[in-house]
Image (cartoon, rainbow, N blue to C red; front, side, top):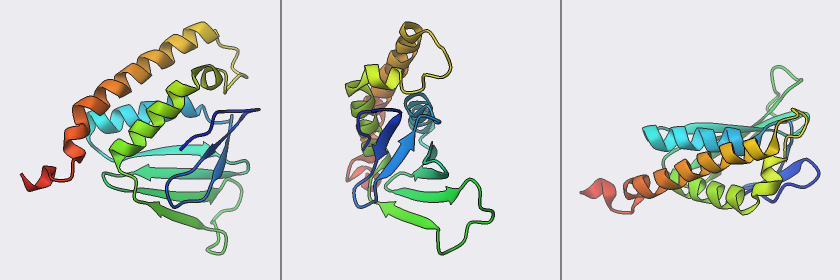
Length: 153
């Protein structure tokens, strides 16, 4: 879903969608993990965003699917010819599992992804580790709601 960050960029894609190059202008690890935690805590759809420079990508994560929209940061309103809207049959729980795996698998790179804020990287690593641990707990607690027969019971 997310590639290992390199030179201030990470590629994002879901099954059946285009690849979107996300820049360091969005602290993807912290913002996206925070949104995923909120979504799993409340079992409500959530939205993550990323800067494509100059455009902005929004991904709405619903229960059974994800919806991607790209909008301009400079052109208002965005013309239909340039509008991007894509759909992926990626459930909320699968999105969160992939997010957890991708961020935890490249922890050093994600901690330093946004480096213009002059933060203490060890303190930041600790905060990200706490968020990832919470996300992991919620995935385990909430996966029962995303099984194939849950709504039939």
